[in-house]
Length: 480
Ligand SMILES: NC(=O)c1ccc[n+]([C@@H]2O[C@H](COP(=O)([O-])OP(=O)(O)OC[C@H]3O[C@@H](n4cnc5c(N)ncnc54)[C@H](O)[C@@H]3O)[C@@H](O)[C@H]2O)c1
Ligand SMILES: O=c1ccn([C@@H]2O[C@H](COP(=O)(O)OP(=O)(O)O[C@H]3O[C@H](CO)[C@@H](O)[C@H](O)[C@H]3O)[C@@H](O)[C@H]2O)c(=O)[nH]1
Image (cartoon, rainbow, N blue to C red; front, side, top):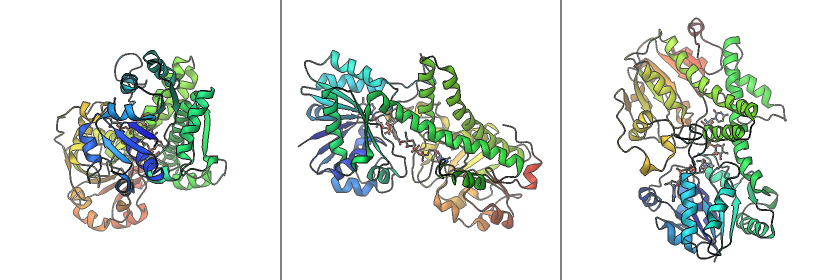
């Protein structure tokens, strides 16, 4: 029986391995992690991450051919294929701080593989890594090889949170990069055979190592660039009276452009886009390509602009002050159908409002008060380290309260702010919400989930990203 071990039981390692186990009953899959609470949660009924469909997949395989364990060394020792899906956060100190990927966790995983292995192994990069990382990993492994043959493959993951299981069941493509040698090709074919259990041949792409590594960074950069493009347009729409939804629809009808990923928003979030673009920028700079680096940096600058533009619009329209005003925040996760808050635009918006001394009442169906407090008091990039290495008792942000329903959040508030596009926010009783609020009652829709005209009929003063402005807002300056 082929044995797979995955180091890192996170948002990628957990779901990816669960789906491999489900689709390949003849393969034994062990997912290992240094975090004891995370592994305990994977072995319980309360999985450590919320992802639609994940529970069912795990329940079908756990204890049969899918195992979660903290015995990292044992499972690596036994495995034929070792996936590495550990954190690759942005460096916060030293060379490349604020841009380069921190490969500490990757390096320690590679050294551990070298220490415990007694048989040949295929080592698969599942984490998103800088191009040429495989070369560094190869060096670590071969310098300690004791005659063992290692083949390094790059097999980046393209799943999106909230749709991870569907993405894994029906991937647009699986990408496998390897060395262009007979041993390298053999390793590529071995990994291809795993995915071939459920992915058709034309969707499994094989390339050289560097193309695979770079394609992952490039794909995220292209996706994020689309959002920054439509968000840049949203500012111009507000200035001119155009409607960004209509513009995006008209633009996306061009089959060369396509309709997806053109929703204007308060900004993109998530653990990947910003981190991976910063990493790309750093790689460009290191390769003497400052113009290319500048081009991609702009995608992040527009994203930051969009978040601060939203806060400024909000404060400006509320008589230029939100001091001690209660503001209801609906949605804290970085997108719907996930409890993940890494780099969520809600952090920047809330911090902006707290900077203006607002009182926040936050509701998100999947995010706990503890998480919100941690996020609002943590330093930038701290969130992307393993849980047990994050600050344990962050300072409580006093002006923030988390509640368990939207109506409680909105009661007596001066404004409601929608920051995540949860489906339930479309069908709330906004008349009831309006009646319970201070007047004038403001609604700031950072995701364009409500019908602005209906909200105006109820009595709200409404701001929706990229939509024609209310007379009230037109008179207010909104300089980012
Ligand atoms: N989250 C996503 O949607 C997504 C999608 C595609 C790619 N990626 C990439 O995949 C990688 C992992 O992302 P994630 O979201 O799963 O992160 P995560 O923080 O959810 O999981 C990483 C896990 O690795 C563990 N870990 C770290 N060092 C370890 C070690 N030496 N030994 C054993 N376990 C160790 C941590 O405890 C943690 O549980 C990153 O490079 C990320 O960029 C993420
Ligand atoms: O039209 C859009 C689409 C998305 N977003 C926002 O963009 C962010 C990222 O969304 P999405 O890409 O759907 O989720 P992620 O889980 O971050 O997935 C991205 O990052 C992963 C990690 O690398 C990749 O594997 C995926 O392919 C890539 O889509 C979220 O804040 C969304 O709200 C918008 O504002 N407008």
